[in-house]
Image (cartoon, rainbow, N blue to C red):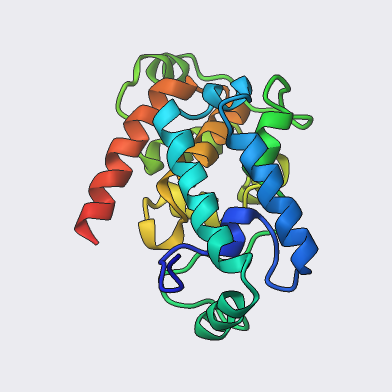
Length: 209
């Protein structure tokens, strides 16, 4: 257990700081099932190692939030009335777990855009993907930050953090890959190619922090 962790334990369990203890316990059990080895859908988003790392984070989070005394200390330390430095904001909903629920579904909303054959070819051939490239595709396909956030259920704050490649604005790397994966699905990008390339940039950015 680590009340000094840089990660937001409420974000990891996908509950709010105001959640009753029963809700925290239920979220913990749900997340264990979502990221467990018996859920094959999760491996279409994460590698086995990433899913294992996520389970470790879930256990770490619950070791604090599942203990009344430690949770009180954690809440006081983090002062959730304002966003602490280096911490991601609490988001509404279940952005990661919900990915496995709709893994075979496309977005319900797709904006119209004018096809550009040259840019389409560039997208198809590109192997090097950072946040700026993802942003270019989003804007080309007429997705606003607001509409993309609404469709993916990912905070617009996080989407901007991905596009600007700002680790300080984002949660744990395993979450980030999940977010990028979901964005790729909506933008009709090669999920594995984009995620693998983006995460290399992201990890280099983390090392520079």
